[in-house]
Image 1: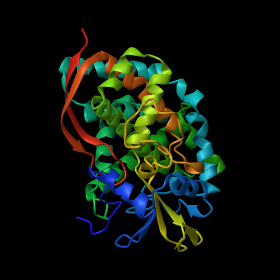
Image 2: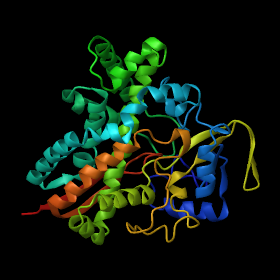
Image 3: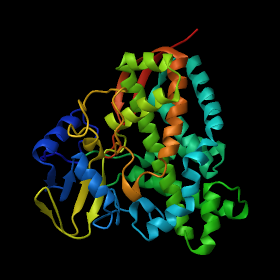
Image 4: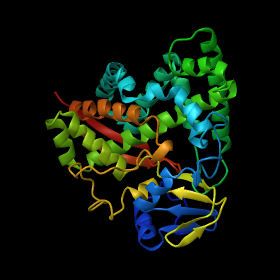
Length: 391
């Protein structure tokens, strides 16, 4: 148990985390966790302003407080301009909404395959059997990884994600998983150098001749895409199914209204209400004063996206899941130059998968639930459910 009011390494999977965020916003909007030696911002205006000011609040040396630069060189999430821009620009064209939309028919086909399997089984784990499978498949196809490797990739990534809340060290299981994943990606990159296919990994290795990325950075970038491209969408899909089940009127609306606007509103509200990436860290490049409190140069600063997304100064009745609320910009995918490059991909996956699921099954009753043991990602490790298909 932590001694602090808020400990980013401990509280993310706790059921009372949003109550803690509310106390921080009201009483300690600039909170210092002395045990971890990190500062925390929780108000929407403060979080968004700091996220946009990369010159004062940099991503280097890393956005994880337990393992800065965990994925190594090439992970531009942990970098700042100019290198951040150089690396991100190599792959940015693949993640524009128009480019991502070209994969929609493939996503539809794959989701249909998954759902047909679920119809046959009826007793399932919606976290592992549904939410987890599409993101792994999608990012693998985008990168150009063979489909026969998906089972191995899923196993390794589950190891990589292992954390023990409250502990600063990365578990040995996660370290082994990361090493296995990076060895696989280095081998796959070598294959793409000989057999280019126009997918994202081929684009990376093709750009190596210009010095960006280097061969080492290619592995780091590919690792980042596998990890970030799967965990965020996995959490989004699981969170959505859980919160939909708790709000029958939302399920009814999604089954009756097949418009794109309806499902988009439900997805955006899920991202706001149960933000998959609860926070990320920054490093203060020069001392800054926030709400009258000076944060010293070199300090680590936590931007708590999830707390900002429930700020009552920005949203009316923020603790209510309301798909009909007027749209306001949330920070569920970050903000500024470091906003999530894969946001269009995650949104498309959710826009395909969620309507197909809720319209296939007349009912789904969630029984045993287990939170994902992560200090950053808020999602579900298990969502055991009984499915009742439509006739």
